[in-house]
Image 1: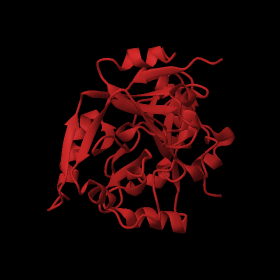
Image 2: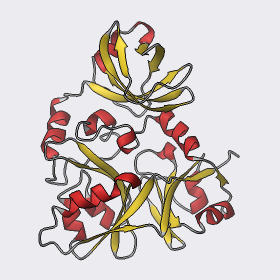
Image 3: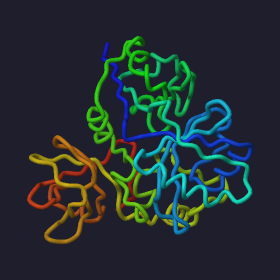
Length: 299
């Protein structure tokens, strides 16, 4: 039997969206269908500029009389401030909450340890919090939001072994999963270049939301020229933002990485033309590859 692991993610935090208009308020702002969240599923979504560029990504779930957003801790106040600009007369309260900590758990059939079926976004209460299957990919495991003072003991009692955020990063590097502004440039990144379509982060049938037009146009016209891809390399990790090149020409940009693997935003044409698929990040050879869930555009 494979070992099941968990870790707290200190760089992530929660916002409670309360008030009778919370669902309709969020529905007009985020990339996914909030009605599914209100119906009892967890989901992953983004909040965009009016021009369709990335601002924030977050997980959404219901707990009590609120819709909760799990977002980047260091940018939580910015998200609250940006959302609040759209409140107008809506009966909505946006509240940062730290009594619950957030994290993830992974390993073969980890959902079974929580009594969850293997289906995206299935959620169940655990103590004063919740645990849910990651709505993006089954291989990622589960996310949780539990009381900060006893989350670790609760998870250990369920038979999980404590890991580290670096252990989780290794998993998401291998799977090709972005982690907020570590991997997506604010006011520049595009959802479909970062896997939001295949990872269930955008709904084309939900109706209008801020920034919808560019995302929809890219989808229907197949305009994707770059993709965030897993990469491997030897030696020290290139700094995030290091340019990727092929024969001196721009081939993309490194994102987060560690211990020989990471993520990079790669120009697909350059990668396909590269001998053995190898690009350069400074003096370091970078080998991108497509994760098995990715649906890359044809050449």
